Image (tube, rainbow, N blue to C red; front, side):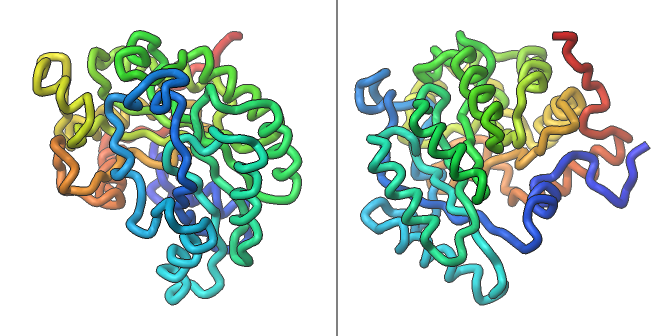
Length: 313
């Protein structure tokens, strides 16, 4: 039976309340980086689904310093929660892809901001050199540090198709290397990528449940204007299944039933700007969608990990 007094999954807010004795809020930062599959190192044009404008708040402009972006972001929250502390979230593109000295200067600029309590670094699994991992290991002894890896799929054929430029084995290796250092480790998956059937999507849950992941972000496949995937959809629509909101709710619940219950589920969906979104357009805010998931889980009398089977390995 599901206890209605608690959420039927391990919520990110609950995780943060265990870690911090005060309220914290993520503040996104665009530090002006690029990606190895944009600059020719691994490929050109980036991931086929990616238009980075969908990720960043308006204040996140790389022509502004890290400090300026934090000031603008914090100003938005500080009136309502004057005692709030913040996590500087280096979000756009690959935030470990530059000379280590340059990267560390930007991280340290964020940490020098008085209200910043730690860092969340979004990156790719093929962009974590040992010198940076050493830095994050030392930093994590005194500050909150989370490294968030874009995994997207556990199927190499999908990773090739979406032009990720890395394999699933590289994702697994990066996650294990990071978690072994005692660093909070996040992962990101897109549910509904072209060519993946329902069984394969749900099997991602079995595979990532064996990894030492602290937090997992899920989101639905979205078709975004000015991306190669939008062009691909126009040419090969039969390769895509764009879920209705109700269909996706059932998929997400089936997914987290199989998920390791120790893993924090940070989100279920992503919400792209309406002017960039082609489909699916559900018209639901993230918190509304989450409430629908919880309501449906209660109706189904289920919870995260109900069907989880620990690996024998």
